[in-house]
Image (cartoon, rainbow, N blue to C red; front, side, top):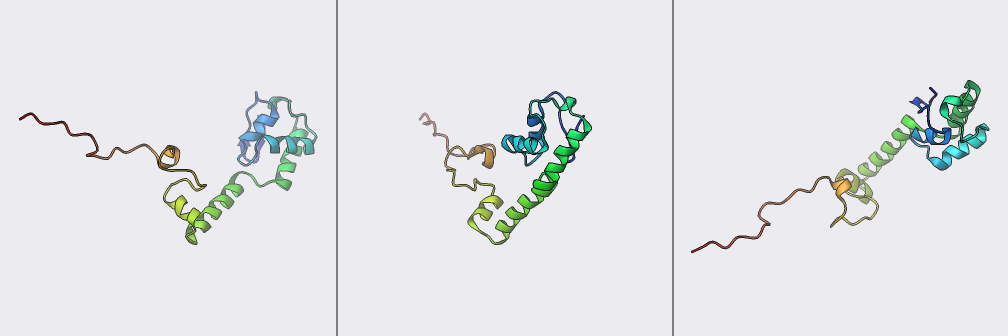
Length: 128
């Protein structure tokens, strides 16, 4: 059971996939890290020895910002945008898409569950 940057990596996955469980590391970065650490990307996590794990940890610590530190940086950037009241900051604070997507339709992920407004249904003609 390998533990890198405070994250327990899954044992049965190849190491290049397992590294993507760390916040801030995607597939491409995972391959770059493994090349620098001279570790075979197709090895399973359970087959790694301690020296390989320490080499991977060392490369990540020296060259990349991951996990808690990266999350602090990102949230600080969003807070700064909100504080200066930029367009993007306002969109963040109102929970709307920030990168130019349309909101008339298809913004459900960001806006949440649809709320039906009362009084929009057609009136049924009353019998006289």
